[in-house]
Image (cartoon, rainbow, N blue to C red; front, top):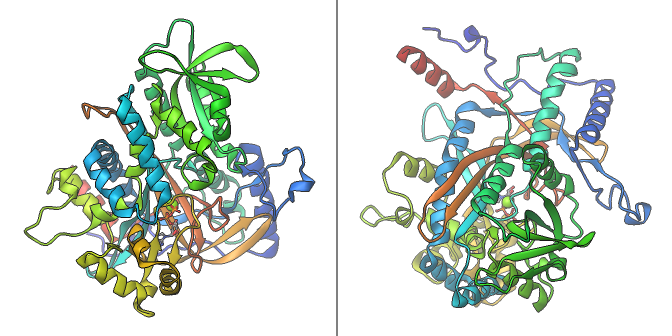
Amino acid sequence: MRDSLLDLGIEPSWPFPPHLTNVERENLAQIIKDWASGHGLVVRPPPTAIAAEADPNRIAAVPAPVTLFPSGIARHTFRKGLAAQKAYNELYAAVSRDEKFLADIVKQVVDGDEFVRDLWAVHQTVKSEGYTQSLSLGLFRSDYMAHKDTSMLPPFDQLKQVEFNTIASSFGGLSVRAAQLHHYLTKTAYPLLQHPIAEGTLDLPENKAIEGLAGGIEAAYHAYGDAQPEHTKCVIFLVQGDERNVWDQRHLEYQLAKSSPTIPVFRLAFADIMKNTTLAQTKKRQLLYSSPINQDAKYEVAVVYMRAGYGPNDYPSQQAWDARCHLERSHAIKCPSVLTQLAGTKKVQQVLATPRSENEVSILSKFIKDDTPSATELWKTFTNIYPMDASELGLVARKKALDPNQCQDYVLKPQREGGGNNIYGKAIPDYLKSMPESRWGSFILMELIKPEPQRNLILRNGQIEEGNVINELGVYGACLWDQKSGKILHNEEAGWLLRTKGDKSEEGGVAAGYGCMDSVSLTLTNIDIQEDMDAAAQE
Ligand code: ADP
Ligand code: MG
């Protein structure tokens, strides 16, 4: 048996990034800027890069912020993250089918959360007249950070779930491009550095997020069945009018055009739902779409893929809520339905992750059989999350949240998506005190995951930033299920995302300007080497 990693030709720790001269930095930055524009690793410019007045016709695109090098992720943690996804898909499909469970969740947060209240009201309205579509599509993303578990020797990385997204899970398109960029650099630029990284040194896994997510939309499109004879079946991408992350979405459209060229795909702004769609006067209430460029062509919408509607800003008026209700009443397959959106609230995550005492059954076991390998793997990804209500556990959490020292290990989260909504560490006590206690129950308190920083360089708006960074791995899932029978028609792990941010930054959102795109370079730890040796021994 070999006793040293070096004997195996493996570097004992992540050796990158190599030291770069200023000339090398500038050269790499130029290569990345050009590649990003050439391959659609781009976003509409933030106002800090190009002011709106300088681009009145909205023609500009700028490279998305991205790391100069991929980040090292232990192979076993990466594999575990991907392997857990199908079980997570099933779990959230099951949660979205459990109306009683969700009603209870809503009840717990509704005081102080009008948005959740209004979403629930949409479901109630549609339920009262009867849903006409029982198929439901989820394009999910489970986000993780690696927690160093020091209770074991040697310590090892365990993925801990940050959150589970059930609506508008973004960056599938750009994550594939970021992985391709780093792959390109391993072949062209890295081997030529003064401290070269020889081709073949980095183990870069393939990322199939674009195919995986588009594959979910295709599965739903086909499962929808035939349109009325006078209509052509189509897919709608429901988007925000002022979206900056356009090409991330476009990559999915381009994939559909490539793999299913007969599927018409239209982009519809959330604010235009009532202008461009109607419901057929039939029992099924098919969603009919007329394109503003050809009013005569009538389409029947098989799938509504929502990249909007996840937060209160998309609902400035009652009309916007009426529009959401109009979609929900329709026969189109929604990605997601209101119930699936509600299944993605942080409160659901907290309730599922709340540990029980030895003799109590877990809430998770309502949805996924206890003691199965999948349930065990899911449990390992949970971290401590507490309610902030007046229950016994909630009172413990309130104490932690209000204590000026203890609060530093926590993040306080409302039931919101899209970044910029959480309250971190020291800011928690004053924030809580600024509102009536009756609203506290609409938040959850989550222990901060503290991944080990690595070094990297980030190219953002043409400037290079260098320093310690931490990574967040997202794993996509595509799941199509029957809401009534529970039958699962499509269940796939659908690629991954690596986002990276400065280790002092709290939020990680790329669109919100906190984080950047990155990709995975697999590293081998003792666990991985042991796994390989075990596999070899079995052969
Ligand atoms: P949102 O739905 O707004 O994206 P998240 O729960 O994903 O909210 O939190 C936003 C960001 O905050 C995450 O991407 C992550 O960088 C950071 N974050 C959230 N929860 C934790 C946690 N428990 N530990 C460490 N960082 C966290
Ligand atoms: Mg998030």
